[in-house]
Image 1 (tube, rainbow, N blue to C red):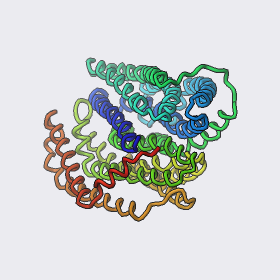
Image 2: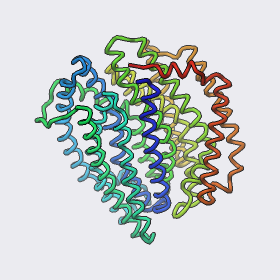
Image 3: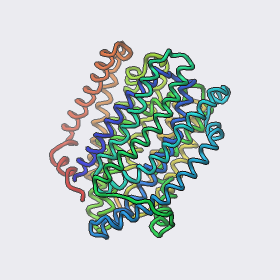
Image 4: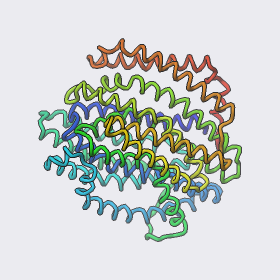
Length: 524
């Protein structure tokens, strides 16, 4: 299956999930607004979600897939050895998750207290609500960690659709809870009730996703049995890879923990502004970055296991070029029109126009780092496919250190916008170091041809950004107008941006038949 087809499958289903996510956040803005119960909910929801992305989707998948593929290849395409390895991992994973979840549930008041803002900590009833919601939602982490093992197996077998579709269930469950909450009277007590329903929906969605992925794993002929927990050589090897991978592959999520700490020093509503802005940032990051990183890791692992350095180099070049072709225009467009999107999506109900404008400013700062976040997801698999988990640790540590320094300098002056800028600075430093090390070790370097194409992509994106900058004021009255006016204004901006970028890309020979054929070449 070609890189474009793999990315298209994962990215297309991720896009569906993100559309549901937008619907969720639009309802969330109108039902809970910003500040108060909304801030308590965002904090309660982010804790299990960040842990999930950090440990399950980030570190675990990056370490598990190469080891699974090695056993699958050595067994000549027979799943026996790979299945035994997966059963050994599951047997150890379950008790770890039980103990970790139990400790987290007991310690939840202290965990919430560490990240709660002064306004939230000062309100005892809302603080207790945040703790209760976090406890109800936290089982989601354990359920999704087991589901991620199944997703990693399916991805290793090049069956990407089921795993990419699973997150849709989270948004459907949350939307259902919000629709039920919208029928209430809008009082403070009604918002608390809605928050509780949201917490229940999170854990319910974890169970649904686990059942869904288990069904498709069985359809793929992969059935696992429960074993007695034992630290086998395979489990030990995975543990050695996972521990540094938690840091190396999860820099974006670790930076979210840092953000939570700095957010605790900022005024009420800041955590909601960042969460709502990150929804727009996560759209291209999820569709492009996660899709590319997920799609290339199994193929890179196979190329490297077969000693095909040329195939690995070609696949990495295709991934870098495709990442920037899709990400740079998205970043430029959101930087220029972020406030238009937030006004159109979020203004209404309990979410004021001022809230939307503040959210738009955060969007513009966040997307400065968007291409870097995506490139990190594209470059890190090159190390993990070689079972090198230390190098991403060092680069991530450097990026995080710079992120913290930037936050210390920018947050006191620019508030939550400074927090977003600090994350972008850290991401670009991490990306630059990863590339420099790949080049130094001879694993990968930009050829003159690819570098020239990237320069032309940047020029096409800049031209599009200039046009959007001049066009955006014409829709000012529509961005917070009726539903049809909002849809029309956003659709017009999207259509204009796509048309200008595509025309510029064709004129600059960024998009042509030769490039498409190259990207469609079967990676493995």
